[in-house]
Length: 262
Image 1 (cartoon, rainbow, N blue to C red):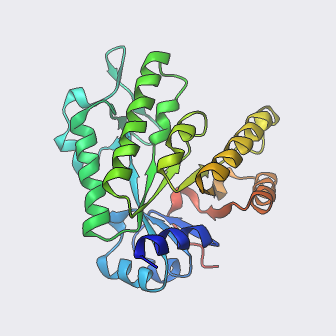
Image 2 (cartoon, rainbow, N blue to C red):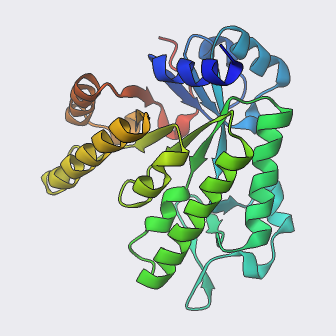
């Protein structure tokens, strides 16, 4: 059995996962089959300890959003950002600016960062966050289509460059996941809204879509919830889906800054 097959097989057989964007805690994360971490918070020794325990480690990568503290920000030019009516698109909640995936400078920097994680730091895979921004309904239809096309091409390039590593996409459940499914290994559904009745039909549509994608592409589906935005009914609904659809599930503290010791 090659290392490539073993990595994929371990992912398929995983029973649990953790998401943690803080510092350290390798000993607690070593109890999980999958750990999704912020690379800036981990040491080489911690990564080795987790992998020696059998944990698959995924590096968090923001695909479209650039926070002020990101070292790559200094390398970006005005034209690397996505603009709407002449103004840079931003995510005010997290105080980030949104990069334009049509920018070769930005995608080149992203690919260099990902290569460093996978080849130099020996991560088992990457967790692509903020890629679902290309589905924002607030974007004009033409811009949305171009950003989605660029996102799909980026995922294809990542897969071609790193055929032996694992890729998890966070959200992007409308149309993006249908196009990227052949090139990724897992899809994470973050903070599904199981509270408001008006979302129920959409959730059922997504469930059926994911079921087809799993059958056709051998994907794993991860359910990720934060305690601060998850009601008891929302948690119960998620756990019911987890049992019925064989999803993995993790309930975290806000902003994923604690590790559940269970």
